[in-house]
Amino acid sequence: MSHLEDKISAPKPVQGSPEASGQLDDLLALMARLRADCPWDRKQSNHSLIPYAIEEAYELGEAIQSDDDEDIKGELGDVLLQVVFHCQMYAEQGRFDMIDVIRTLQEKLTRRHPHVFEAETLKDDAAVKVRWDEIKAEEQSAREARGKPKRRLDSLKAGSALMQAQEVQKQASKLGFDWEGVAGAFDKLDEEIAELKNELIDKAKEDAKYNISKANIKEIEKELGDCMFALVNVARKINLDAEAATLTCVHKFKSRFGYIEEQLAIAGKRLEDSDITEMDALWEAAKQHERLL
Image (cartoon, rainbow, N blue to C red; front, side):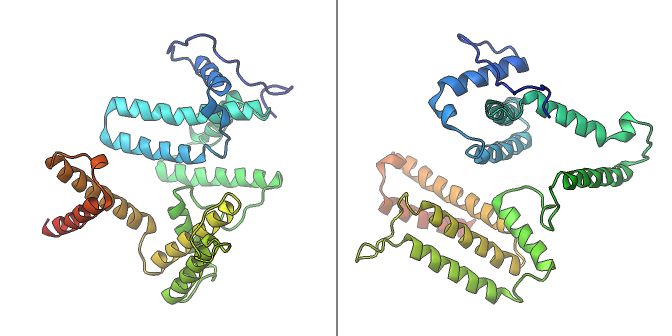
């Protein structure tokens, strides 16, 4: 039940040109205005915003590592934007609003810290952790009473898709749902790649060109996901971390592409002025440069 007994109503949009007051109500009114008048904000859904919420969390982590106050404030604001954006849309749906979210958080923090707000005394952080787990177990029992039974894989921590894929495979393996060696994982990867290729081939064309149409985009997405999940399985079977391996590749790509840009700049050229042949040659030069470091 929300904080209001009747239907939830979304905040009213701010009128005119708003000032940066630092007040939560003004921020909610600003978000309501964006939802009303900005075409991009208006077309979003709670599901379409999921990638942005994940991205902003990562960018906040990078900002904290940089220890730059302006960057940190900006990224904290971007994370807050995601909360405000989602609350606005759920309020528009009449489900709940920001007040409900804040109250839920307050109740949770109070409930999980009885050693602060009640008579309980816990001597150290280890005891706090034990009590925390007990309280979370009580909360899970309450969820089950609401018809939300806990499954064996429900306890997995949220994270990137690669991290979750590897962890869910690891947990399933502990329950005996796994291949004995890496060969089975490779066979599954080959199978999934073949299925992706088959889904991509335009069967209406004799030359069997790959094709992505709106009619089959969802199936292609599923098959691509299966391929990536299978590749994560290979990483797990050879005791490598798929997330770390992918990040290594990302950093390597950025470094090599940066080398291309630097070499073009030395020659008085921009990336836009180059072509794939020249950039590919510089890519190979970047690989040679790496070996000399």
